[in-house]
Length: 198
Image (cartoon, rainbow, N blue to C red; front, side, top):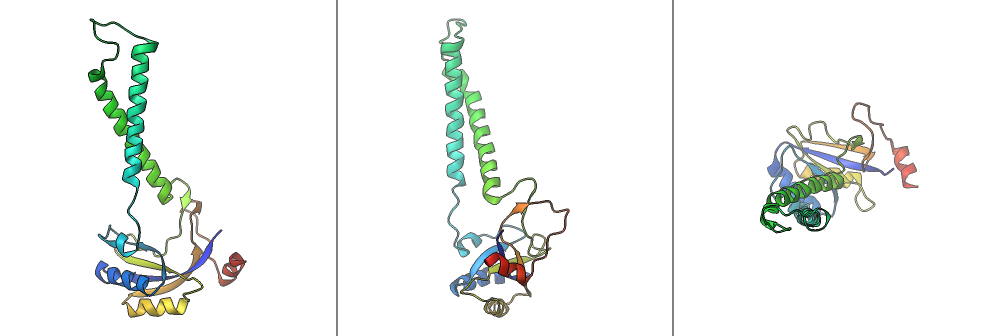
């Protein structure tokens, strides 16, 4: 269990949020995450995130599908059950292209979805803490993790200076855990934070 303290800043629009994220990083604070109701262009660069490798994974899954399809069909038609149909060759490559293409697309699509769900921790009975109930509705939320270098007061002052409409402090589980959203989340206190640190 990883319980941490966070300072949460709420913004009404993406423009001040974008500038705030850049300034917060420049001042040395650790941003846990930024939650927006829609994708904000350039936010990944502002957060200092590297480019995703999901497209590389998709290529690998696709090539795996191509290899499996061609290998299996060539084995079936040349070794396991060779048929002479109207003098056609045992390995009729042009007629194997459609199923090879479909299997390639299926492997790439399913593999990328499963990889994305794994990386983002999306699965049944997996739960994460919501820092604000309107984070994915119409508000923009930036969450600063309180570390030994940055205190709660410093982070709060910085968010206030950068025009946050609402600022609060929360003690919460920083990672995912098994659970469902129909049950109320446990409320953590300063004592829980101290226990988790030791």
